[in-house]
Image (cartoon, rainbow, N blue to C red; front, side):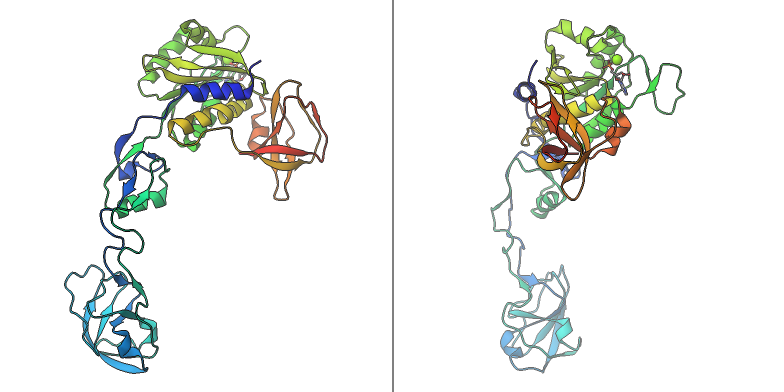
Length: 395
Ligand code: AMP
Ligand code: MG
């Protein structure tokens, strides 16, 4: 059996970061910067007031209280400014440019708030409540490096240096395709022997949580030809495809039957539980990566976390690897098959304990939904006693 490490290594050696393209800022959230972004101007671009108050010369307010004539009003956005002469005050608002001659700002709270004259009751040193040009960013300074994930604050600084468009690696478009003759669309009545398709919802949502665009394709039955037709139709919009079901050892395994003859997709047994049967390879002219995951709901979910999520990260140009683990104390005994790494479902508590959920079957979707962690049990370990330290992956 192939190790989980070897399987992920093969996947990461195959998938490539998406080619950079220029996007409007409105579409750049969640993408990865593919250029260094620098500022064409200093930020702030000019000296300005950090508070609502009065721009004065510090030496004119050395002895307080003092009453000064208010010779002008400057709001944020004011272009033409009158200089502040000796003994003068200018009423100034937050973000407004500091007029010439003034070297400090007295907050309105330290004054009587006058508009013709102002009485100032507290003194301040030069530079009080003044934001200096360039104190955030100097002209030409790199504010974000290539490879940075664009989140709201990063989007803000890109806009803040005046950019409308930015070179990024886009979010990969990932098509999710469930297979199974037994599957019925949720909301429709269930016949005997049928179940509602849940995997395509879990997987599409997982794709989105991994920072990609998820497209849920219409489910296909167990006919390899129908599967190939649907795959073909979906490939035009896919940077990667995730399928569920039809990869096991039984009959009516449409994914395996359709893709094996291509020779570009391998179906293997990976030493893990759940999720032993795994298919991975590339399809179509563009060599689109395809992840053929097993159909059991817990198996496909765990497979996604271990293999597809890191691949999505790599396609986004971000660091990619197995999910991070931390340690916890397990509250109940665990069993695990020899030679396979187990990913058991558990509830991680604030106190650093993890309790295995009731129902560890790979079909037990409700048990999965009640968990917030996967408990990892190494290949060589078959029994874990209650109270032992274990590795967990937070979900
Ligand atoms: P398969 O991998 O196709 O042999 O399916 C394994 C098990 O997972 C079977 O019990 C299927 O009914 C179930 N299964 C397959 N696909 C889905 C799906 N999309 N949603 C929920 N259960 C599924
Ligand atoms: Mg099936």
